[in-house]
Length: 260
Image (cartoon, rainbow, N blue to C red):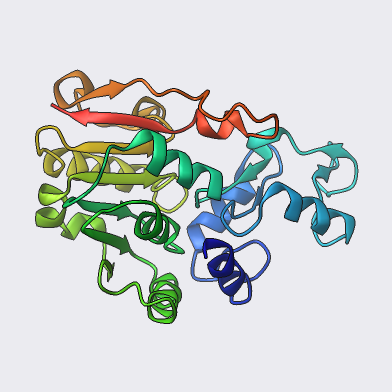
């Protein structure tokens, strides 16, 4: 079913899965020191990207001199950015990272295309799955899928700034944050958002799933958050998929924390 959802969403979005309303994110991706392509990992798996490259619709290469996509390979994960989890990453999170979610409330911060919510509906027993998304265009896309696949009994999408959702965060049993602020907020706003999250995600024993790690997210930001007093990292087993074609590098970006 998630593959059908991905197809529905692909039909509604440009190839790079970014919308004109995402001015800051588009600007930040263009400003990176090496050329970077936004590829949504939920919509486009490796095989799909390969076929797009063969058709000339996408390139894994760029020119070292002018940035044109002509010659050198785009460097691994640094060359491709996704703001959605792939199918494999969603399965890893719901089957191997998180415990049984029966009766639990899960919040996805910056729910974008809704992949975490749809994955949670299909792969977990979570009682309620809330997505908080600032971009109205993405909220409409999520609502379209929720209606088509009849997910409304457990999924709700709020068109809101996460920094207005104190009671939702305080009641959450699981909070998921995937590349959530770096490309969408300037550094002062990122710091403010993280301070807000750390003040409100306080329910003892609740879980926080982040990409990248909190340490990496905070680096370069002026934040006054003492991690050892707020969270404890839970080690994950990244070897649960012995298959050769598993993108282990992507799995290793996923971090789990328990709120103290």
